[in-house]
Every structure is written in C-alpha cells, then in structure tokens.
Length: 155
Image (cartoon, rainbow, N blue to C red; front, side, top):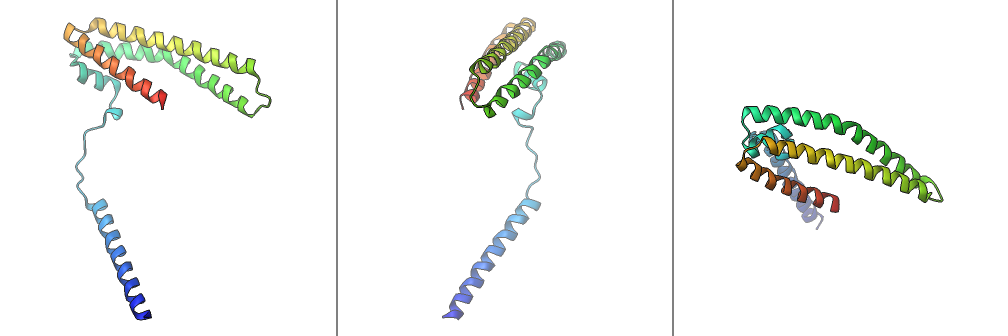
C-alpha cells in the first residue's frame, strides 16, 4: 500500500514539475510581439492628435494649450493634495472637529471648482482651433471622458 502511495506521490510531483517547466518556458520563450502602447500609456497629445486627426499646426497649438493648463492646474493640484492630507490627519483626532473638517472640505471644493473651470476653458480653446468635423469628434470624446471619470469616482 505504501508503494502505491509513493508512486502516486511521485507521479503528482512529476506532473507539477513538468507543468512548471512548461510555464517558465512559455514565459521566457513566448512570443515577444509587442502590442502598441495602451491608451492609458499614450500621452494626451498623441491621443488627441490621433482621435481628432489634428494637423501639425493644430497639434502644436494643442501642446501649447496643454502646457498652459498644466501650469495653471499644478499649484491647484498641490494645494488640493495638501488639503486632503490635512483633512485625513483629523481621522486620528477624537472627537472629530466638524468645523475643521467642513473647512477642509470647502477648500477642496473650491479648488475642484477652479480645476473644472480651467479644464473647461482648455477644451473650449481646443474646440475653437478644430474644424467642424473635429469639433463633433471632440464633443463625443469629452462626453466619453466625462462618463469614464464619473464611473471611476463612483467606484
């Protein structure tokens, strides 16, 4: 009986060893075919140029507008990060000071409003440099991005 158990155990170990070797082989020697960069890895400029079929002049203007909006948004994003860090530091405090929490929440809300307005103005300027077909595509793209952002926040 122990001979049967030993043979079964050796067989199972052999199967596991072979399957692991096959998996390692597939990993090391599998096809090295590279997929194109995924959407999330593309730069915003590449994405918009491709999606809207922007010409070189429009792409250069978009890059300039994007750099400008990033410069305007950077201090706001830094301020929001700092405010959120300060807000969540209050989790350790007991009792929770409502007035301080509301102050941080209002500050974060004001920053979010400023960011939204900056981004809206950015897309308004982008729309102004697009031709009518590109404007329709931009409108669709912005709606898709808005739905995706809303889904992420809802999760």
